[in-house]
Amino acid sequence: MTKTQWMVQSKKADFNAIGAAVGVSPVTARIIRNRDVIGLDAVYQYLHGTVEDLYEPMLLPDMGRALQILQRKIEEGKRIRIVGDYDIDGICSTYLLYRALCRVGAKADYEIPDRIKDGYGINESIVRAAGEDGIDTILTCDNGIAAIDQMELAAELGMTVIVTDHHDIRQDDQGKDLLPKAAAVVNPKRKDSRYPYPDICGGMVAYKLVKGLYRIFGVPEEEWLELMEFAALATVGDVMKLQDENRIVVKEGLKRMGRTRNLGLRKLIEKNNLNPDRITAYHVGFVIGPCLNASGRLETAKLALSMLLSADEQEADRLADKLKELNDTRKDMTAKGVEAAAAQVEEQYLEDWVLVVYLPDCHESLAGIVAGRLRERYHKPSIVLTKGEEAVKGSGRSIEGYHMFESLVEVQDLLLKFGGHPMAAGLSLEEEKVEEFRRRLNENAHQKLTEADFVEKIWIDVALPMEYVNEPLIQELSLLEPFGQGNEKPQFAQRHLRIRSARVAGKNRNVVMLSLVTESGLPMEARWFGDGDGFMEEMGGSRFMDVIYYPEINEYNGRRSIQAVLRQYRFG
Image (cartoon, rainbow, N blue to C red; front, top):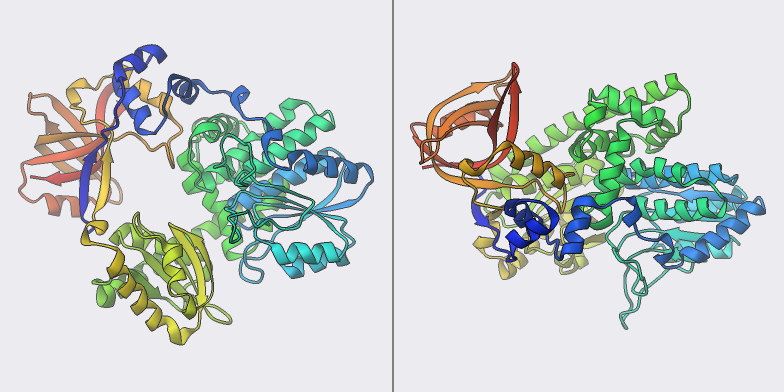
């Protein structure tokens, strides 16, 4: 089991003054400060930001140029091909641009690379196919910023290229951005960008372009606002921080999602038995998003895009069924992969500091998910390798303190290809080099890491005794939604609770119902969701426990009571 260390956030501010200024309790003001929201204007926008606060698209570099070119090409009747990507961000970006271009009368179509055959982003065969098809202009979304050679080929073939992307940009020896030779490169990460918040996804960049396009062609703004749910889907699905304008788009987009006019999305919500009036960022990240992603993982992302574009009820229904089915298959395959990977770790690599697991039969599109689960289970950098057609392919997920991309740079002589960032990476290598790859990564890790790096830090917002929790506070906490990356659900903690009773419930014995008592004698109902029998075994004869919790209102048979949903616990 992963070692954990409970830490209380200690960021400083005058929480009474902030709370009084924006009309919330000092507890809520402290939580907002813990999310690095600083200054009264920023706090007010965090709580009450609206679509009026979204940034002007023209602040994005090359946006004016991109729109000017598109306007001319549309008016001249030239053929435009959108080239997207096979994940949820790429699917939503492609959808947004295709819908918008069709709306303003463009001759547009789209291409999405095949994950296994094409790999990520635009490649030479896609460029050549566009040339053969008589395409005049290529418009990329969620990719293209690193496609230096591909853009040169497109220029040789006489095509105009507009890049819209959000990924990091490589630099030359002088520290200048290495940009592809395209007619326009719209990316908030450019060094010359004036865009106030660069951490937006590809779907958001596309959404901004749509706003500019609709303005030029006189499309009512309401039609642009109607598409916001797809910018929200992309933002949550691509695990962007739910801060600044991302937070506004997701908050507004989630509200619109429940009453969406998009047939495919509505069917997908139905198939997963979600309440349309209560779609949360969790549902997007863990239910809707994985269904859209499953198409690109196991078949083709064009399935998901066809569902979103469908205007026929029966077709939308059939495609939503298919995506749900693919995601269920993906879940089963992932569970088997995690089981096999964990067995390998337990038998052979438990002492390793970097886990490198080779699963030849695992579907290569699932390697990253399996690596993520290993990282969660052991709190160690984890790389899962699978057998590709020409070489071993792998995907890695890291922990704070271990820069995965730089670690791969150190062993690049063993690799055929690799790319990534501090927390995740992809790579390929020859099968006979797997053992040396594992050995050298671990040798290098011993130079950089210490045992302390493998202790997972659990951050507590406030050490808040249950005596201070009431219904108004719980209602106030809902102002902080949507929760997700960069805006995590608040965590409170209380020590030395007496265990009055505990029992396992639920069809799968995955809920523990607890009756606890605080040191001052206040009774407290609590729930733990997880392996109920494992919890009871761990508890043994313990009479006291410390908990990290989130308070909720429990309604049962017309009776309302406050209960604590436990996030972490330790017996004492």
